[in-house]
Length: 212
Image (cartoon, rainbow, N blue to C red):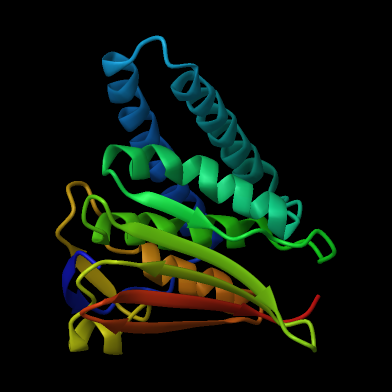
């Protein structure tokens, strides 16, 4: 991932996760505006812009009324793809998303925001022409596992040791360095676990959630 150095961060909450999601929406709108300037007739960019505006409205509504309707995993993966595609397209990174079975229970909407943070980080770590892989599996007891893998240079030993536990000083423009911290908190708040493996061949993050 493209971050350097660590500092202890206060424990984030749902409001912080949603504020980070709002920042991601603003960044997506900026990217889509640039893409539309290059290809004003591309309907896909207009559709993504409409989707992002709808997501902004939903995030603000959820923040006001504190409701978080569940998403089925297949819907959640579609949400992540739609939200991450503009960034991936701008950086010439391919998103590879595995199909998700429809016969599984819904998940908290904040898990979707957590996964999107992980996918955005993976895109930013991956060089042009590389791939970001997003997968989903369940085991015999119903544990759900989302996997996000990238082709980036990997984390330093220090960053890997503290991944998602300490805020990092981000090298990204306008980066806050809290995306992985917020993702870990959202997963743990639902009784799950976030595991990170990293090497010079890339980084793989697994989000494990208990059976519903």
